[in-house]
Length: 235
Image (cartoon, rainbow, N blue to C red; front, side, top):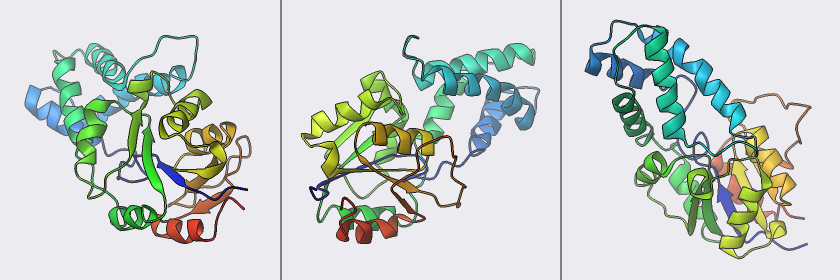
């Protein structure tokens, strides 16, 4: 079996911090900037249903591709209508994008990735718009050989075509490639279907979903990854 020559990373909650609920700080800014008569929780709770629908419908290959900006702007349109607010959804989404583009790396990210890069080429494959991911990469000290977003590809994880596109751009086979991500659906099932070696970074010790493929390897910190690769996880 070939050794691992390539490691592809997810971005959010893998390399940089973006826990659920962090967006509420953006909503507070939006309320203040636009002088909206609502609370953060009201705005958040009225926006989240549209986000949940987007998370599901984006996986349907029979529907047109929708990027994050369009989906999030649509969510603000619905929120402002539901709460009877005279809000500017375009400006709200732009503020949200600015904030997401400034998410902090995990403390170990730069050191762990730099160590991986001593033996492997690396890339990033993320369900993201270029508008927030590319600026966020500037906060990292490390660079990557290839960066591919769902917006560029017009496909979302876990569809295997997205992973196959990344493999083609890197010029490598699935068997020599590891994919590191934090979600069992997008980051374990997707690369598994493409024949890659998924490494699930499970910082919070989330129980496995028995309805989804189990990862071949699981870590709780990126610092564990170089040792895993040194032990040749492909064998």
